[in-house]
Length: 162
Image (cartoon, rainbow, N blue to C red; front, side):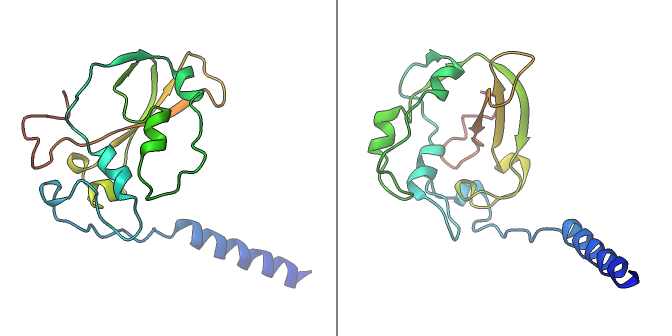
């Protein structure tokens, strides 16, 4: 009996130590957004996706959409990470849209994403937004969106607030 209690106690201490361990901090692959290429950088990333994420120039007027429109978007049939984005463009990727919704959470992505070259300051990272259609919300009525930092070398005229 004493051995069982001791074994359980040691397991609990081991799990507690593992849960409290700090994750290894990623090292940025560039020193600033000014030197970060549009395709981003890192060890595992999709350069074509990052180019889409880092677009700044709006070339079309925004269309008003509902969150239900996002939810109903089809999944690609043959797309794989790193492929060209034609199939995704046909499904709606890249459209300039306006969504009216409730903002549930705005989360700064300070962990270092490849589209931002692993940088980890608030000025150099994007924010992920959780939007809901109505309050009170129920499970699975939300969508993640991301905003990108706009302080890139060719966009000094654009600020985060625009």
